[in-house]
Length: 167
Image 1 (cartoon, rainbow, N blue to C red):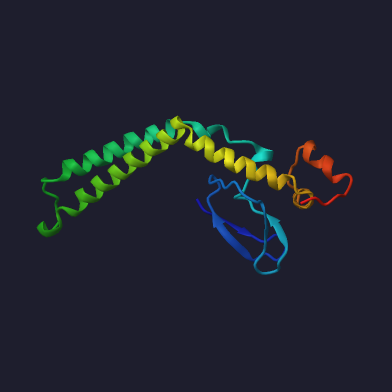
Image 2: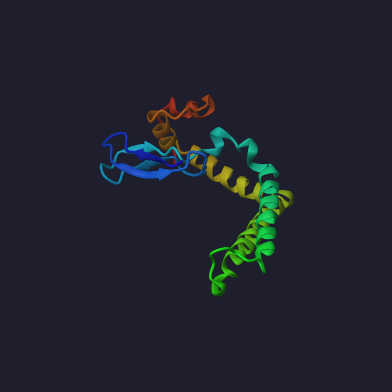
């Protein structure tokens, strides 16, 4: 289910997004209409929120592997079967689509599992964490986060007390 996000200042629609999707990047964005800054609900600061607990679970990939296998099997099964109401010239189309989609699901799930098991996904999160830590060293950025209502741990608020503007 897609959610629309509107600028808190002017009310103009900025984007639509899936609430379960996650981006790990700069949270503060500017409205294209009024120029005011807002917190992007799609984005998260890893240095503050940490790596999601479900990031390295292989269960969803195993489910996709089994589902892909079933879809591919169904495509293979449909080859040579009479499909009611389908012209004989295109009777290959539906089984081919099922077979290709199933194989793509299988490949994607295997790649995902390999990335988790070999540490490739962990390296990606390490890179994103380092980028987030660098952003959080910028007191001007941290001040914007605080002013916009982003919940910050005390360790990032300490640098704001003196009013310095490192960057």
